[in-house]
Structures are given as structure tokens and as C-alpha cells.
Image 1 (cartoon, rainbow, N blue to C red):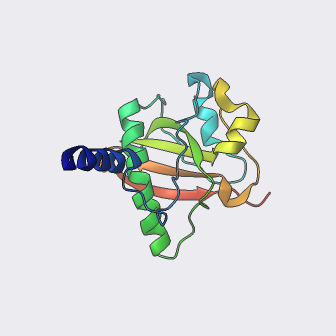
Image 2 (cartoon, rainbow, N blue to C red):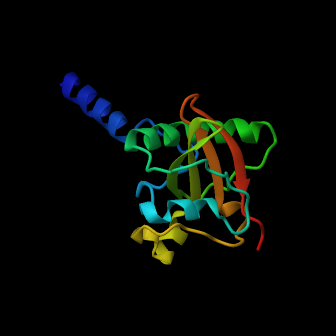
Image 3 (tube, helix red, strand yellow):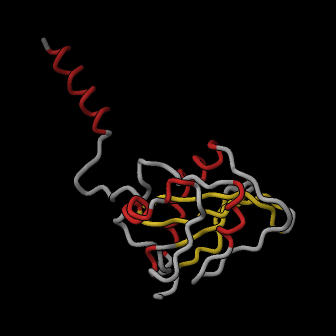
Length: 161
């Protein structure tokens, strides 16, 4: 009788993931990245109210594995940034990102641009157009991910309007 109870408890812990009530909310939406059509990729670099990188040459769609790697490392980067007393995106809400790969100083990078998931849902952003929002403050942000080193830089936020 003890074995079935222990097994049921183990399954419950695995299903719940051992998450406590004190766990921080998830940063990224389970809905995944927002689509970005190839013809729209360069528009992602022309943000209305925040600086964005300047790609050298062609852009391309990063692989799903590269996006997964970026997304897995992003929470640690933001936690370290916050621990240094720097601004980070408000959480909640959850965010959805658009991703474009490019070259800067000869190195492959990904520019990731994030919007609140609920904003993405209401704005009809699932059609592949680059999301460009003027204003919105820290709810709208972008960051550069270096594919060679696995490091982040240039965390930028939209202005207030």
C-alpha cells in the first residue's frame, strides 16, 4: 500500500513541478514567440521610442533552438540586472517576443523585442508584422543576445509616450 501512495505523491510533485506559492511569475507566455515575416524583420530595428541595434547586412530568422536558448537564459540575465539596481521589465505581465538574427561587428546576434502578452492578443500581432509601439514605458522592451557567447546586452525600454 505504501508504494502506490509514494508513487502518487511523486507524480503529483513532478506534475506541479515543485512550485511553491513564493515562486516568481513566469516571464514569458506559454503562447510562445510572435511570428515575424521575413519582409518585416528589418522593421523590428526601427522602434519608435527606444534605441535598437543597427544590423550589418542581411537578417534571418533564428532557429527555434536558438530562441529556446535565449528564452531559457533571459530570466537569469534579468534577475542579475535587477540585482545590480538597474531597470527591468515589470512582472507580471507575461511577455511575447519577436526575434530576428543579424550580424554586428562580425558576430551573429539576435534582437529580441517584447510586448505584454495581453497587448499582443488584442493588437492582432499573430499575422507576422513587426510590432512597433510608440510609448508604453517599461512594458515594451528589447534586448540583444550574442549567439557566440550566450550573453545579453543593450536592454532598452520604450519611452513613456
